[in-house]
Length: 126
Image (spheres, rainbow, N blue to C red):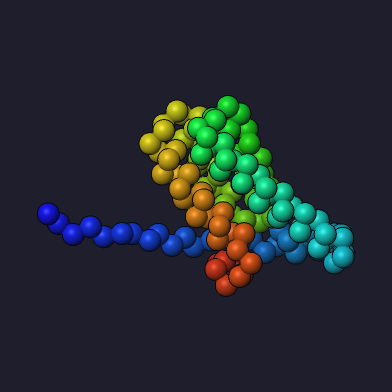
């Protein structure tokens, strides 16, 4: 019997800081801070709701909800999160359960790193 190696994938999370900078320029710091904080909270709640639906294998309306997550991520400049959300929708819409499972696992990792309070895990190179 061969050795089994546990893989620990690490995701590089890219963010377009210009998206947030534009919000601050257009709204001013106090209003922008409230809006960004609210949007990040909404994104986290959306991701939690999606995770619960997938855990329960309730795939009704999942594609639409993932699209919502994708739009929120795009609005906040979370490039990698938006891309992986789009990939998961593609797998879901094609009814490819094996691919969806793999991309879903990646989406969970990317979401965790994207929403982590430590900004050192985010690649700001765009």
